[in-house]
Image (cartoon, rainbow, N blue to C red; front, top):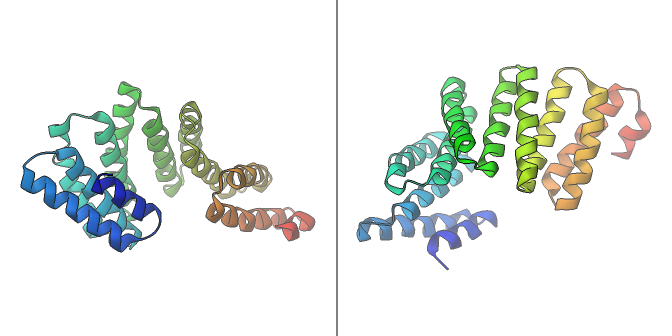
Length: 223
C-alpha cells in the first residue's frame, strides 16, 4: 500500500499525527525522485485537511496553493477539481467568500465540462453553503438541489447526507420550520442507514428545535 493511501487511512481514523508523518514521507520521496507530481499534490491536500481540521487556515491555504501550482503537470481534471474544492472550503471557513466563489465556480465548470459527477455534487454543495452564508436562500437551494441530483447519480452518500442537512438549514433560515422538520426527519433516516452518527446527533437536536417551534412537543421530546 502506497504511503499516501496509508496516510488517508490514518486521517480517516482520526490519527492525524501518523497521517502527517506519511504525507510528509510522500512529499519527501516525490521531491527526491523528481517525479510523481500526483502523489506530491495529494499529500499537500492531505496536510491541508489536517491543518484545516485544527483550525489553522493559513497553513491549510499554503498547502493548497502549493498543490494547485503543480496540477498542470499531471493534467488530471479530477485532481484539479479536488484541489480547487478543498481550497474553496478553506476560503469559506476563512470568511474570504468572494475568493471562495471564484475557485468553486472554476471547480464547477471543470466538473460540468468533463462529466465529473462526484465533484460536481461537491462543488454544488459548497456553492450552496456559500450562498447560505450570504443569506441567498433561493440560490442556495438551487445549488443544493442540483448537487443532490449529481450525488445520487454516483451514489455519493457522504455528499448527499451533507446536502440534505444543509437544505434543512436553508428552510430554517427562511423560518419555514414545518419544511425544515420534514426534511430533517428524512435526513435522520438517511444518516442512520449510512452510519453518519455525528450528523444524526445534530439532526436530533435540530428536529427537536423545529418541532418545539411548531408546538409539536411530542416530537420534540422524542428527539
